[in-house]
Image 1 (cartoon, one colour):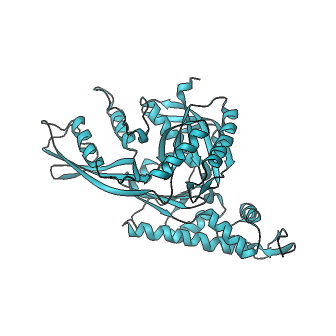
Image 2: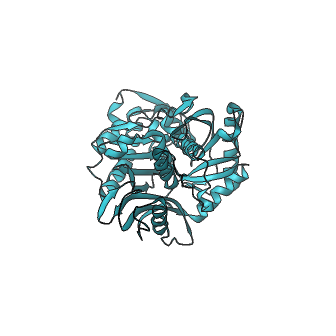
Image 3: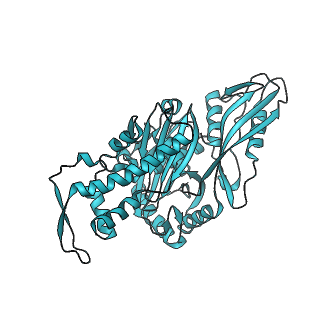
Length: 421
């Protein structure tokens, strides 16, 4: 196994850090996949509300997860593709217009119009993470995905710019580097998860990926094959745990254990006669409560989260337009009944995110919605490496355009990777 064929995905969540090491496989460069070699997980300390609050603590969590993954894989790349998310993420639309240089639109023309759209003024306290072309317009004909070779005088593009807070990004990089690993590139977590779980058909039809994290819930909406809307709901699994602390009078750790072992997202799925034992805590002796009460508390909070997700999607103009339904990922998606509750709220089909056929090797170690971000980060890295590598977005570098004669499919993939979706 060649070391240069290894990729690492690093998902540093507020509750759990997951490191995944994989080998790049598949039909290169057309259809790169990964063979999972090792996965490591560790409780996260040092993160608060999705951002680094303590660099040293976060670095130790990363080191523990990396050590477990390295023991399984027997190797460790020098750098990793690292996920980032949170309320500091913002998105905007930017347009670019250029005059076509010759008789036909060339790759150079596309590069120029993309550069114009990317040149949108970004505040000093923010940095550009992804620049995603939505569509091109040649003269007055819109809705074009690949304008190269077309005849026209004026080329326009509409681009989706994703920016992140400069300070959260810097502290995240420092944490990874202090753990002994270089950051190859920062990648928006819901986009990484989408790469691991969504099919092209779903993205064409219209689909929402809902990532139920500990500190927050991230949403990515795709329609007509492109990312169209990003949002963060500032509630997640940690809020469910806090509700249990106050609702049944237990400690934080006991509430987390109750949620994991007895939690049910849909209240009606619980046998009303079933009771569970509560451990003694504070003024409370050992006691019993109906499991239905536990489910009721969880149901109420998740119902609120899904309702906020639905309102945000409707506010963005995509209510009733997602024929592909909803896909749930993240640690919160592993709770029994969560897809049923989501389907009740959204009124369309809902499924749990599991890895596509591009993921092989120790697939069972990532065959859960909880690991989809790490798997997606590794797939993103595999695609980058399969096409000759890519510099980090932080360095402001882009992938070189394909040389003449390269398969047109590979050209489109290269442009897609250049701006991620």
